[in-house]
Image (cartoon, rainbow, N blue to C red; front, side, top):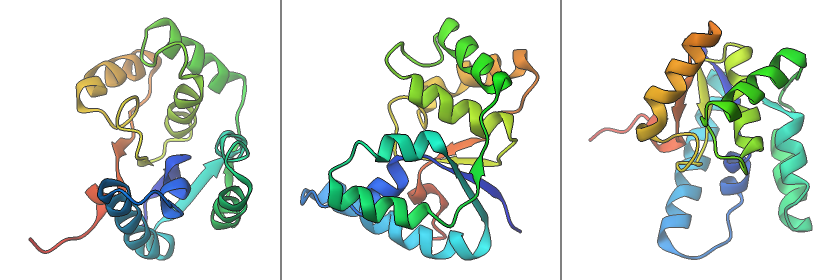
Length: 158
């Protein structure tokens, strides 16, 4: 069954990861493996916020990352999304320097995505923050999308 999945900046970034440490290469491999299935099975979307963050990457990586997500529909921001970001910041769902992360969460939540795919395990896919995020979204009248990494979405035979 197809799901609406918001692609946050770290996904294309790890798809083209060049750092050689094993932990980064593992994330790259898991991202590529998941992407190859998800792009055919699910409805992947992203936003101008992701493109703006990718514009800050080195030129070679920036070009590849933007090309990867270029076919994806862009979720539109709005005054309502801006208000959600402000509420997230007020209620410390995200730290003050994480307005981009708050915007990704707001966009995925507002547009009722089933999943927000990310490797940002500090501010977004963080089990210790999940309850707080859910309570603030419930206060706003929204369900929280699943906040997961590509690894968590791989269909592995263990």
